[in-house]
Image (cartoon, rainbow, N blue to C red; front, top):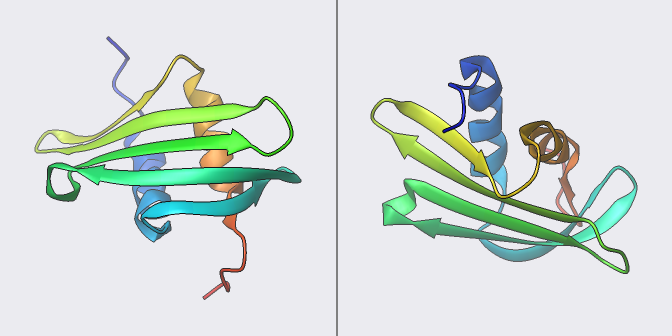
Length: 98
């Protein structure tokens, strides 16, 4: 099982995930274009995010859970650092910075 993550990091991850639209959308991260799908489960307590790079092979997949014991991030078969870096870099195409 994964080590208990840094709570500061998960606070930022929670904020980023909450700000992303539900459903499929396009975005950019590190000068690459992605099709991203965000799906909510269990009345929003679980989030699944999948991103596929357009025209290339990069792929991001994660599950995020809002538990009573605190938030938990589970990358799917990739380093946690890759998922967190992607979330920090992701910008939804056409979304204004508010």
